Structures are given as structure tokens and as C-alpha cells.
Image (cartoon, rainbow, N blue to C red; front, side, top):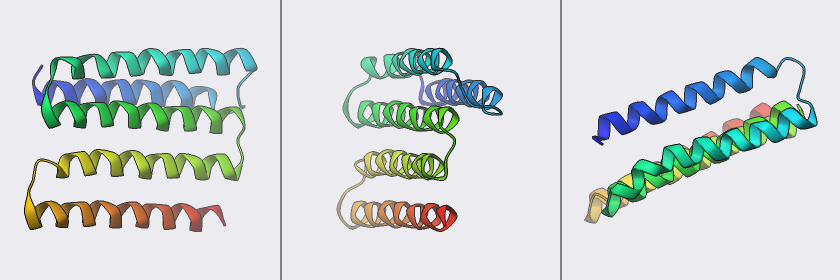
Length: 139
């Protein structure tokens, strides 16, 4: 699977999950719907991580970081839908920041020396900014 196909597949899975969660977000979820959502997230993770198994090296690491990040964000969004509180919305923002950081950090591994150091520093800075924005929005 090419890099572009993998990214398109992941984007489609993410959009599908986001849409399915947002549809039920209006009134919260029943316990059964929450369990079904968890099962769907697990299935989506399995689908997103499957192409990673054929990859090797850092491409596999990036792919897995993307799949794991999407899973963590989806779980946080599901929880926020199930129990809509300021804290759960904050946790969604933090999950997104951490997922983006993990992917960016893995992508930095393709570089070396000062370029890699700069890349990691930018990733950490973006994560810190996202966390600060989440904290500000929580207040």
C-alpha cells in the first residue's frame, strides 16, 4: 500500500468515526451505545493498523503511531459523548495533542542530527501549545 493510499484510508476511517460519534453526540449515549462505540473503535484500530504490518522501519512506526493516536482520540471523543463534561472535552483536546505529537516525533526519526533535533523541538512546542489551548478552553 502506498503512503498516499494509507493516508487516505486513515483519513476516511477517521472521518467515518467522527461522523458516527457526532451523530449521537446531541443527547449523550446509552450504556449499550457506549459499548458498541468501544467495539467500533477497536475494529477501526484493527483496520487502521493492519496495513502497518506489511511495512518496515520507521514507516511502520509512523503508521502505528497514527493508528494508536486515532484510537486514543476516538476513545476520548466517545467518553466525551457518553459523559459530556468540561473535563471530558479537555481530555479530547489532550488526546489530540498527544496523538499529533507521537506521530510528529516518529516522523522526525527519518531525519538526523540538527534537523532531527529541530523537528523534535517543534513537535514538543506544538504539543505544549495545544495543551495550553486546551487548558485555556477548559477555564
